[in-house]
Length: 374
Image (tube, rainbow, N blue to C red; front, side):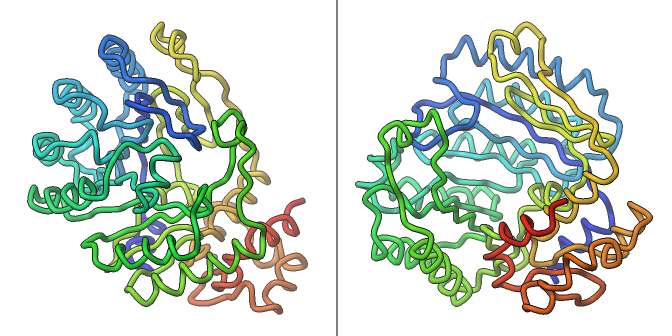
């Protein structure tokens, strides 16, 4: 059991996610809310963002604060300082304060600014260490920039460092993935998100009709990655996420534990008082203060299934006592008929008052959830 996730489970946190949609270039696989960096747009965006954050009148302690994108590090130092000033009232009690960065848009001065305002975790977009593939997917950085950034971040006092990697990329071979893993072994990082490329509509690679691995090949590669990372001391605590020395992404755990969070910025999602909301993806509307696009109330039965679906992504699984306290229903009794076959097959286990997926169960979670859905 991961102690930090267990603590969060027993002390419901409140997350704050802030989306910065600007990028200096657009990657060929990206489907997030994003647009090219333009100074005047960023300046106007930050003013609108400040209004949106203030309208929530947040009066509860924020446990995790996460600035994502887009590329937050594409902002210049003055703009970053404005952003941090907006978030300063909520940063003081945050256990984890993360910002996503790309190596080519970082400087040591930006790192010192992060440290000054309480940022204690970096999430670095790397994707692969094969520079030919980086070029193919529209990334601008070089490996030396990644290594320098990690060294400088640690020097600046930010030692909780995560990197994102991907497999199933164009031109990528099994040998390329093994080389990436060998580099990971040598890096002083605490966390790794390792995703298989999923082609979304409206991306460049989708329009180019790129076809990745077949299902069996992808499963074999996934198993290889997991085994190698375990050898290197990385614990798989979620389907695609690995931590070292007790450093899971607490902010993402707020999502997986189905806890509540504010979402601010273009295209951001939030979940408050059993209401899920989704902000507009239109910059012009957002700049005019028209932040919200849709919201829906999550009914009791749907909320229970979401808690089950999200909780089974975690190796820790779902606390049976927390589930009962929240819903006044015994999870094992309510889902008994549908859960039992997976327990019998060794895909799910009941251990330490938790319903947990086994390693194989995590690999087959999509199949399990399809069988569990009403």
